[in-house]
Length: 238
Image 1 (cartoon, rainbow, N blue to C red):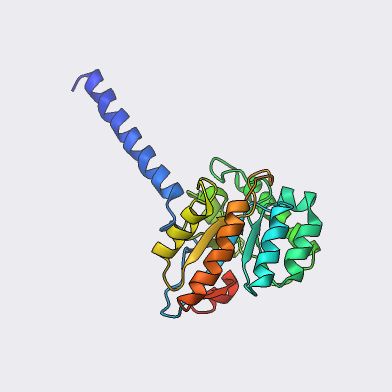
Image 2: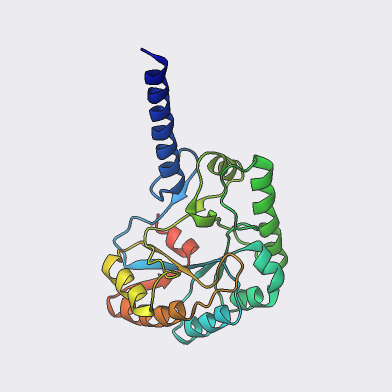
């Protein structure tokens, strides 16, 4: 075999390896080590509403008003740097009986990061959440759902589950609230974890369409017999 042929073969192997590593990093179906949760297998019509990337006033506050009006509970996966900016909103989330989860401090993809960076980033947000009064177990959700090898390894060492989702209506890209509603209603199943956003990476996204969709979804899901629970409450069905 000549050098050119060898180069072609090696390049092909590298390209295929990179493709599968990327799929492994971004898929919400599995990870090699540690516990990854995307849903709960159950016949009970119970699902979890989750919101990422906040706190993000005034939209998180508006969302909390909707949830309170409809007496529904949710889990908020907060970004540490946004918690530092708006601790009063996080206190409000807690005062309304919702659950807080850790969505990292920096909201950077947890790939090509050292173990020490990952641990520090997660610990920093856990500490902020603890300082605001949370005593129960704090679940973690990887930024962008991206993981690969080091993050799962570190989560396993830190005795943390990676809570992802099995239902993503991509509310941040939807043109209106009905797109979000229609997607959720078409794909909903017992035990689903629904991914929505009350903020963005920097916590300043207009999430009005998600708030409108939330109000309509809660009412329509209840009409179908579903109950809305926090992630921790949903995990109790496992």
